[in-house]
Length: 83
Figure (cartoon, rainbow, N blue to C red):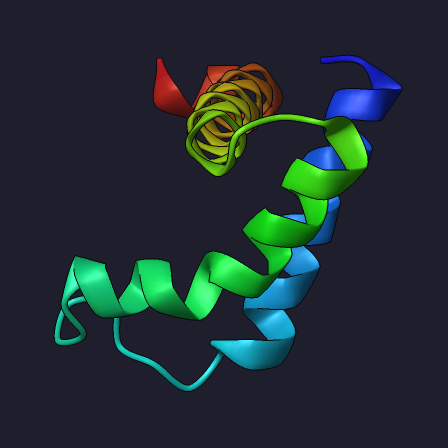
């Protein structure tokens, strides 16, 4: 993940932490969650001259990549305990 990608992901995650911290993702429909994300997605779409759908797809790809990196680091850090 590049620094630009990390910044892109961090902007969305910061928005989520600030504006969506109180919602329960299990209870709030996905459509409502996407509506809540729209302001940051639109901002990034304008900044990067991308359609908003591509911004969302890029966010999902980067979030998945970050989760896989965290999991790999966790497994490496606790390899001896997990074996």
